[in-house]
Length: 143
Image (tube, rainbow, N blue to C red):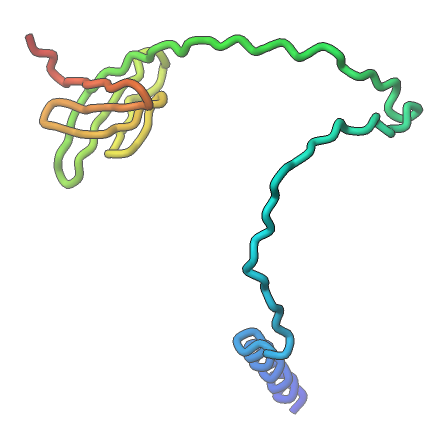
């Protein structure tokens, strides 16, 4: 008898919780304004001096010099070798990265390797593109 009563109470609790989640109380709704605030000017103020406790964090010094600019290093081109082109059941290619000591990778259209995205697959050719360069790799290098 006690087990049936417990099961019944749990069932009532679950059903009421479900009903309250599906049919929320309509008197507790919030009004949302769809008007935009227009900002004509933004003023950025210098941050205030640090108020950190120097006994805890030590002496705090303000940096007066501008940080040194980071030197831009040109990216090295990666040498890729097209090993195989498959067209059934889906088109994919196997590509080997000659610069690294890794296994050949299986790539489908849209996959990336070393910043190049596989854009097109032809009979013996795979075309890779990045933001400013296009690579066309062939399985058999012809004359």
